[in-house]
Image (cartoon, rainbow, N blue to C red):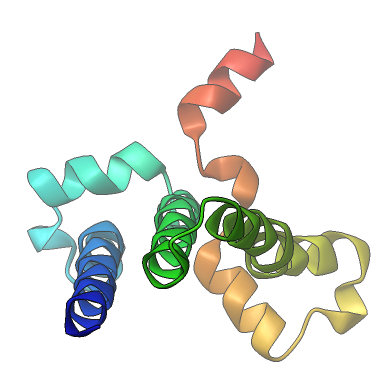
Length: 136
């Protein structure tokens, strides 16, 4: 049992490290642009804006949730169902709902949804290379 707890906290620490590595370039770009160069610039430009980084983190977190559930249940179907539920319930609320409110219901785009939406950015700008291919 102690091994399972250690493994769970290892997943948690790796998630925090991944969040730092993927979101720190955007912090540098916004606060101290002089330090936004080299590796941090390549990580930041790979995603376009925060939305792409949050999307990658969301995939990573979803898989970690499934792995954590799998460690405790020792079955294949329960972690798979957990990951699917995570992607079907959590992802649309966090990533698409603020964008939907901004475009379709601007009167409800306020408070926490506005803060999340402004911080994450536009989903259409997340992957600029894909957008260039679509314009052809």
